[in-house]
Amino acid sequence: MRKHHRRRRLSMTSLIDVIFLLLLFFMLTSTFTKFAEVELAAGGGGTGATSATAPVFLRLEMDRLSLNGTQRDMTALADALKPHLSRTAGELPVVVALQADVTAQRLTDLLVTIRTIPGLNITVLEAT
Image 1 (cartoon, rainbow, N blue to C red):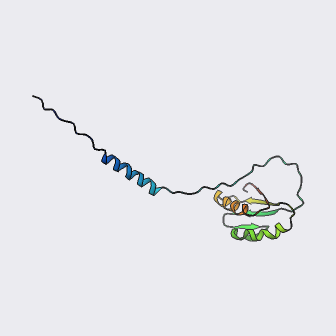
Image 2: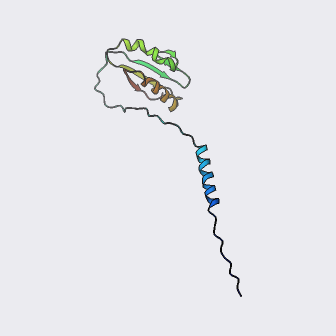
Image 3: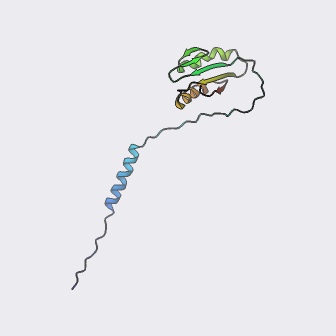
């Protein structure tokens, strides 16, 4: 005579516990950051027209920032640009020259700072 083994039902409790532990793990190890966008316009063909206003030159290096050859702090850039803005009737052209060691984050920090100042026409040059 053969013995009939009755199959035991699998408990779903342990599976649910594992799923909740995984969910808790991924929620605690994830970082939630807000990504910002910086609008960049691609350069197009110019007409060769010159502006009556002399441009302001910003030289961005990894550890320094200079405005028309004078070293400036990025937090005080708005105050440094105010005298130049008061001399213009329209938009003030700002030319940003990048050095080879400048990271994308450093450029983004500068552009975010500059975008808070109204009345600027920003041009970014390639890294040298």
